Length: 161
Image (cartoon, rainbow, N blue to C red; front, top):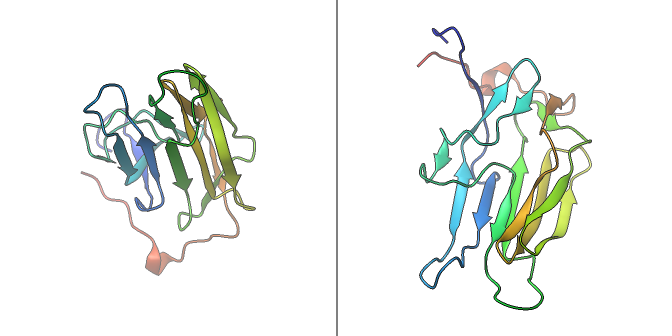
């Protein structure tokens, strides 16, 4: 916060915010589960900076927020259910924009079991292919969620690092 361009983050539940790259790029690649502890927000637009790895676990993961992928088929039909993601804003006082959508990307990609709960606070899908997966179609924005107001006693108060 003491810089000319500070970064703002929202704390999220890492057990409900994760992406899985099922791997398969070579015989020893068993895949990587990435958990997200905080997401960076571009405060002026309330857009999630999906590529910010600052609070990823493992910190070396290249898996972007709200994405799933795999590289697990050699020939024929590629099952889209091998990679997956789940994102959640429950407990933050925010929700994902109802306009947010996902697209298949990569080689022979597919999306299966796409799910969004009624108040747009939890979204998940299986994504994969022959080195394919899925990702948000465009910016992923947050909105105020009047149904999930965080009480001051339960809020995580900001501090400068």
